[in-house]
Length: 148
Image (cartoon, rainbow, N blue to C red):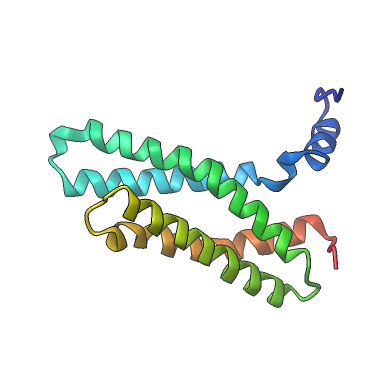
């Protein structure tokens, strides 16, 4: 059994478990950003008196982004560690994970019957694809090792 009392032990547990495939910090930050975007769009598109529906939509977006976004950020980092060249690593990771995220977002909006699924998906797709290269560059500097 692993003890998580110290930071080093927590990092060891994360490195040796299913959690190593998630970037929780980036997922939570992205979750807050996307939840605020969804909340703002819904408040602007509906009657401001009905703000509770906007809060619900924002909370659903937050939960989805924390889990799916954390996994996508972790997957993008895993892909980027496979390349020695920073430019190639970030480009390939962004294309693969950006495409996957776009398909998931668009699919979710289409299956849920969201009116105008493409317009509803565009803010998340654009923000996600623009943020990903910066997160990857920062994480590559942080890790300083590559699994080539």
